[in-house]
Length: 280
Image 1 (tube, helix red, strand yellow):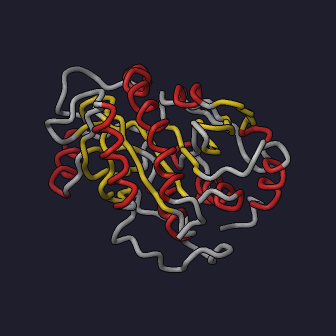
Image 2 (image 1 turned 30 degrees about the horizontal axis):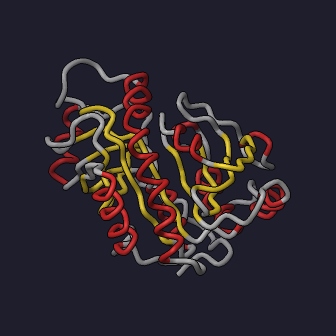
């Protein structure tokens, strides 16, 4: 990580404004900011007020931290994220994860909007990530080792299976359909061509998007437990009718986000009950 971003300054700024130490961090993707509406005792901090953070430039990303409680669990919601395609360097893309870990977060739940590649993933489907493919051809771990991060983090199980079991149980209890699959992360910002989608399908991808994987790489290097969900907002290029647009992504994300918000609210209570301690 370059010297352009100072984690300690951002942590000090947030710590002075947060009501309590957050235990679980949740990253909200395009159109999924409605999850934050369920947080009680909320405190909001815009990204632009955090030292070193730029504002977000992507529609559907509020660019705000929301701290408070889901049930009895202290959470830190990141409503929006930074992307490489916005022109941000890797240290900015990774900064919120490093900040969350320094604040005390031990479990990270990530969400994103994705295009469905697998034929049974209709728009509105919620997919639990079983694995991912880094098709961005870069990593925020390149360069000097930052802080206590591991130089070569084990990525054989990037998404915690015990957390996945809790997610499956929560979905079953709530009657929420939960698909599972492999997420491919591409650099963007253009949507994929039909030929690229066919290639990703042959590589084993079930859905495709432009985020999440860089954050998971840093989280695993820090020892955080990770769980991630894709909301399928459209069929990938060549698999659906008509042109793709970001407005469709946001609209479908908001509709499916209601079900995802219910699932997350139930899930964080179970995670905190099962893993009350620090990261492993």
